[in-house]
Length: 113
Image (tube, rainbow, N blue to C red):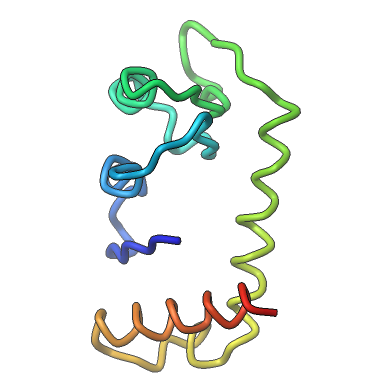
């Protein structure tokens, strides 16, 4: 499990490569915000299959495994579970490294259930 904290106004894909580094996987499942040609080529070059639905405004729509994409619900469920912890959802910590520490702690608590 890896977390990278970014400002609210920054796009998610700016950290896509950093999240993917040092992982060996067959598939990379992500939402539409990660549908960028550079990121898709990075995934393919490393030998994985991108399971990322194309954006609606993409000129050439591409295929993806819709059945495998349904597994992304696990990420959404995890986000829902961490919001049950008050210290996380209300962001009581002002410093990023402390917030990431609590986020990692809560992730471990959920994983150990």
